[in-house]
Length: 168
Image 1 (tube, rainbow, N blue to C red):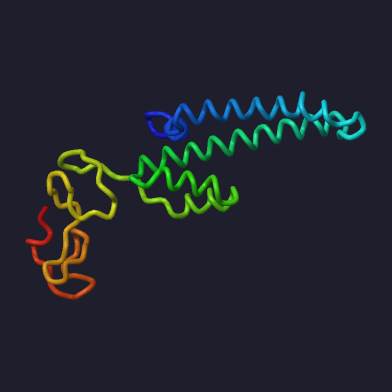
Image 2 (cartoon, rainbow, N blue to C red; image 1 turned 180 degrees about the vertical axis):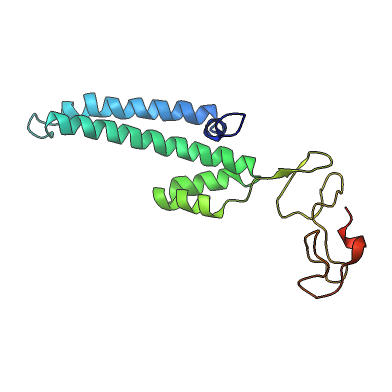
């Protein structure tokens, strides 16, 4: 924990309110299904024993709740990272559940960072801020590839980078 509280709270707040409401509605719909609909159509000996039936009811409801909340998180997180939120949400919904969720978490972009000059969010791999032109990562004057500020020579072309390339 840092001085400002848990990151879990920040991550949970990414889930849009509509997804939270939909997950709660689905949770209660599954409860109604298991408490009212299935017992109405099933015979008394067709259902498992009461402790198992209760466990099945709870597990099914929680699985539906978690799936919808996780899909809502993917929607909010994709928007936050500048990705196509609708596409990733549809992929998470249409692919078999574990595959869609795992694919998103493996392929998502890093979070954008604020520009040190203007605080505009910029992608982690940008060399310049698109808003103010601030140099985020110095580049080699010979080959144009990004280098670190403490390099004396370019690791890609071997040329001396000089002080001009290291200035921001």
